[in-house]
Image (cartoon, rainbow, N blue to C red):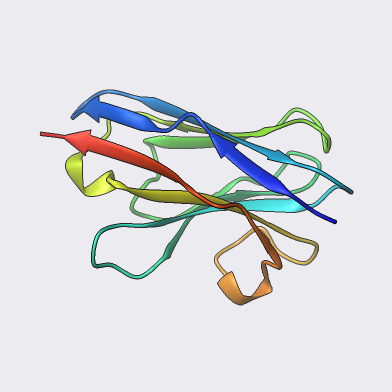
Length: 120
């Protein structure tokens, strides 16, 4: 069984930061972060390999968000800086053994998601 649990969401003001955490049980997987805003499709945000290398970002968050993990067993963090109201979403982490990029259908395991809200 693979379980993913997100934490660290909340309500912040525009320009502030949030740091999300994703804990993955079971074997080492590549991990991606996705988000779904109000009335929007779920979209890829960032991904990282099982060994913590080759971070990959959506264009919309490059330069503002940083994904990291120290080891295959460590939590995966998503540091979100310079937040804007359009970043308001439910953020979910997902695990895959074949990709860490924006191929949503290749992520087999998903967390329940956590709300991140940015006020103007």
